[in-house]
Length: 322
Image (cartoon, rainbow, N blue to C red; front, top):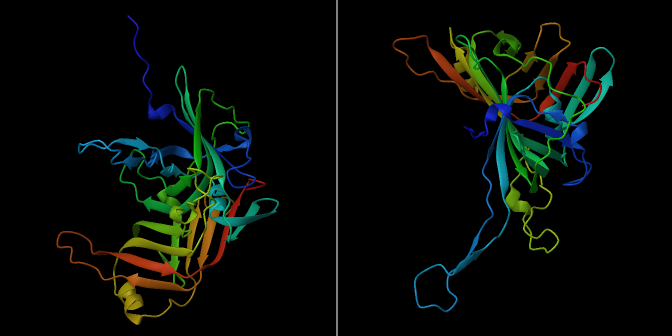
């Protein structure tokens, strides 16, 4: 008896590489696997345009023609390094041991090519060009036991320009991922110069202000495809859930002013300082921090915050060039 081989997500692989220009260049063989436990959730469409009447005496749609090709998707993964930040911010590499990677805001984004391999006896390989990261969210939550819940995860809201399909999986010279990912215990949050140890979970959001509708044009060259995405207002927001023991966070909220002192978020993989990302916030505001009543448990609060700009974003590791 011959059984059918089904596609399973466990065998999928996502590889990306920076393009040399929008939707141009980039060699997948020179790229790297996006991250551990990577998933892609596409919301792709062909934007069908209806022909409602062509002269027939009935109420049926008379036909359809493909319209704008729309390729938005969300990509989730466990980061093993901070290379992915270069698709939101520009980066300068320096240093020797460890290597130092300093990020600053981009006014023109960096795009990437991605190969999404659905491996099989005959693989289904999707190559997406002209990809842009619209926004990114880094999530973390304390683990309660075994499984996968203790990883720090990254969710990227992305859009591609075009996709082609094939059946050959590209060999990547860098090989598979060998490093461990970042875990919940890698986090250290400092607000107003004070480290907050009682963090249950949290997230930081970086939004490039990209709306693909801004880059849809009446143009025969682009045809059904998007033009180059246009970054607008750069926004930084987040939320940290904390078990509280006093009114400190209420005071930050009630003051209605910028939080004075040092405000940082650190992701430190091994405690050496040689494999980490340190975010130093500029003007930092607590937008919400009033706790609800918890009759049967510890009182906790979502500290909702916003930051006008980063003072610095610096990664340290053994990678020579981001």
